[in-house]
Length: 90
Image 1 (cartoon, one colour):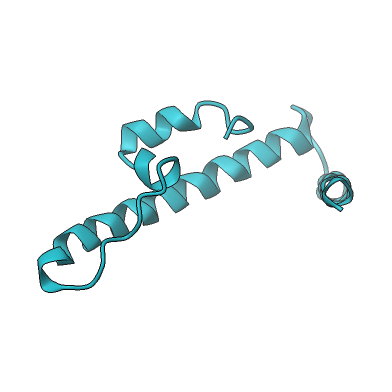
Image 2: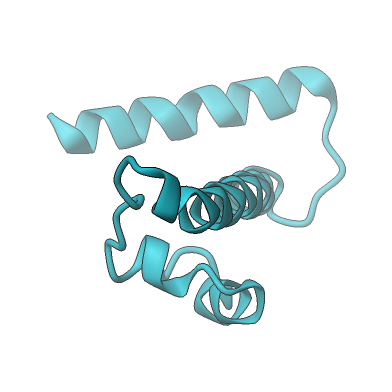
């Protein structure tokens, strides 16, 4: 995730590096794995929360480029950004 500067450090600090980068799967069914599943679920929720926050912040940085914008300008830049990204993916 190079577009989110410093995110590997965040993953390391909060303990979800293996879930994101290592592909650690959720433990299977069974009473003996209930605690491991609960911990995986907690880390996964935390990872999603942090990813969403950092993606939102990064998109905001790209769109505003440090400028104060009106809502209309922000919307137009955001629209252009996603049109450009969508066109590149085709």
